[in-house]
Image (cartoon, rainbow, N blue to C red; front, side, top):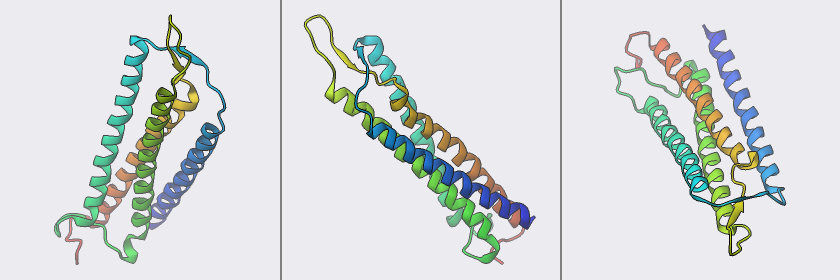
Length: 178
């Protein structure tokens, strides 16, 4: 069982590093963008933007709930499975840290996505008597941070589940404080 726990810990850290490198590459690609195609701004575009922003906001709220659940591993009652700073739990602590970092990185992606959308809407596009246009906020460069937020939520959820499962397995129904 120890070998599986250690393998899961290393897998969690590897996944975390992979996703953090991906965020770094996305941030660089977005920062180096010099032009974006304009799209007409109308009620349908406004509604589509609202839907995407609400979706990202919902994912951020789920992420915050998961962060609370992971924090509860440290604060659990004595008769419940609880994570402790002992040598016995080091793989679970590594998994816990990786899950927390993935979820926080997902919140960062949410922030960057909202920042990109709001900046695009602030700067606007060409305004004429006949039409108003905005930068194409549906471009993959904008949506890549939202997609990354979803990946981090999924991977952070799976990693969180592994941490909870491992701690519960180690407890094995006995009083874990002994």
